[in-house]
View 1 (cartoon, rainbow, N blue to C red):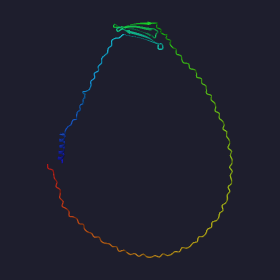
View 2: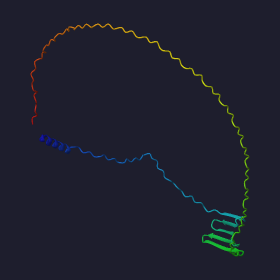
View 3: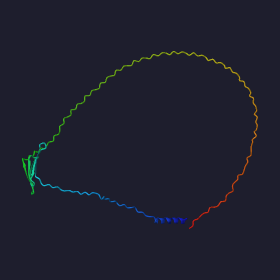
Length: 228
């Protein structure tokens, strides 16, 4: 038995050594570039314009917002000249005359009027005066209760009538003696029974021995043992 176990273990070990080994497949990412894909190239051309002469002027007069502004300007291709006036919060008017050319920007600033600054007066804090509340006590009026008008009920004594009792009329019962008749007995006529023993009809059973077949001859099977 030990030999069979050892042989089976050797066969399993040999099969494990010769078992095929498989490796997981490797997939490469496919790159697809269609041959007919159009190619677009952005083309941008900067547009330049030649300098043009211009001139403008505008004036703003808004008393509600205290805006007083005037601006004018003109150009002849190369030189830009202009001026603007603006009313300042201190009451003066600022006038600026400027010129811009290839040499740079030059401005001449002037002021018209005199600056006026209002005198600062510190405000004194005055506590607010609140009138004393006029509180009047509520007028309370005592409730008026009216005594209920109670009338004593008029009680009338019930009138009872004495019952009229009448003694019942009793009559003594009358008993009548029953008429008794003596019974008449007749002696029964008794006849002795006649008993006759029955003659049983009994037959003894017939016993027959069973016939058994002769036993067949037994032959042991041939066992084939393995050859090593």
